[in-house]
Image 1 (cartoon, rainbow, N blue to C red):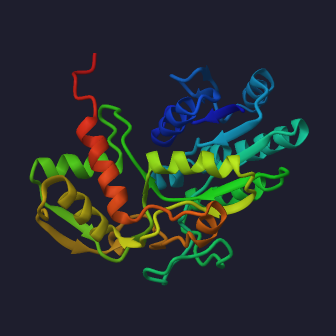
Image 2: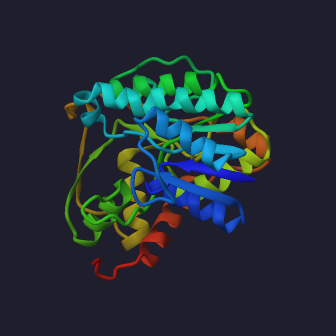
Length: 294
């Protein structure tokens, strides 16, 4: 299975590349820089040329502008990357008989607390340009035959100096003994990128199509998730105070839990729970490369 991955050098893209290589797949990673091939997701001609050159069986689009605040200041750029690029990939997939896999988000609901939302749950909030464009990307992707849209909330290690991921920041703060201000009213089903990548390729191999939630089977508040991760790393809770997502400058959909019943039934196995997720993240942190970067 010849696979072309867009966003191959990002947090998720790195995990997808490792998993594809571990499975012996013929995989090509594309990124703005640092991948097997350089492609600007805002350049329509470059996107089409990349697909034509690689001639993949499957395209996995893990590229996105994910910074909520930045997306509000670059509406055109956010739409171009998160939505228009997906439409172009869907056009190419439809014309060439390529399977398109679009990685989406979980940021669609508010006021539901820790509810786990299934794939058909009505959307109740589109809080900003990031979320609006990700939903548009879903719609565009599904115009391609047998396309797969995967809703998720992921975290993992990236190893980019000066640009820590969420969990890299958490573990670094824990090790330095710094206090936290934790959201006790934001809920999600965070999964580690390693498990996500592994399950994603199983889902692709199963010929799944349409929308699937791929996430932890545990819905946790951000506060409880961070405390669980800290305990896994050090055995004790860090110092913390609770706070609310209402304090954020940019509105967020705070009820982001995902129901994974559909994917569990489809694949015939349970998704990882929170303890399995934080265990995997702590293990990856312990094994990370800490040698000085040149």
